[in-house]
Structure formats: C-alpha cells, structure tokens
Amino acid sequence: GVSKLFRRLLSVKKTFLSSCMLTMCVAIGVSSIAKLSHADDFAQPLVYEKAVSQDFLKELQAVLQFADNQLLNAQLSKIDLNEDGLDEYIVRDGSCIDNHFCEYGVVAKTNQGYINLLRIKSFNLMLGNEYTKGVRNLRVYNNRLNDFNYTTYIWSTSRLSYVRDTSA
Image (cartoon, rainbow, N blue to C red):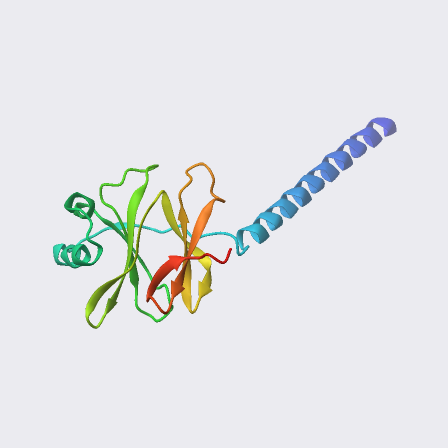
C-alpha cells in the first residue's frame, strides 16, 4: 500500500526532475547557440539567382570581362553593400561547379554604367558583418575544408574598389 505509493511518487519526482534538468540544459544550450549565432565573427552567405536579361549580361561582360561560358549562366546576388538604398551585384561564374574554385565579380551601377569593385577567384565569397568606411567587408574563402580560413576584403576609398585587408 503506502510504500508502493511512496515509491511511485518518488519515481514520478525523479522523472520530473530529470525532465526539468534536460529542459534546462536544452534551454541553456539553445541560449548559448543563439548568442553564438549573433557573434560578429559569422559571415552571411549569399543567395544567388539566374541572370534574366541578356542586355544586363552584356553590360556585366563589358565590366567583368568573364569568358562567354562563364557569363552564359551567371548567377547574381543583389545586396546593398553600403546601405545607400541601391543594390550592388555579386556575380558568380555560370560555369562554376559546387565545391570548386569560381570566378566572382562585384559590380555597382553608377550614372556612367556599371563599374567593377572586385574580381576574384575563390572557393566561396560571403558578406562579413563588419564595415570599412561605410561599406560592408567581404570574406573570400580559399580553403574548402576550413570555414575559419578566409581573407577579408575591405573598401578602399582611394581605389574605389575592394582590396585585401592587410591589417590583420
């Protein structure tokens, strides 16, 4: 009777405490992950779309001077790099195959047409969370196996383009 009931209550209490501990650990873990995901050290991947206009591709070709096969199926990512309300374009080589080095170009539209801000070959290109002189930094990855091995490119006002950050 009473001892059986007591053992049952003790078992329920242990299960409840274990459940609470697990929930607390999960909550602490999720909280830590959330804090980690907002850290300044994380880069933002780009979302690419197919280029739609042949005229636009011709303008890009004039600026980036990609080979025809690279521009044929070029992929574009629109992003406002300097928060002026106007999108710049990051162009990925159309002949690029996942997990290989690809040609990337960064272009901006001006009153005189498109200008080249950076052309580089890399495994991946992402947006950094930092800004230099009001323009978002770019991270260039040349090591497929190590996401922490990247080179930062920063805005140069004297060159009006991205340059490798040599300060680190």
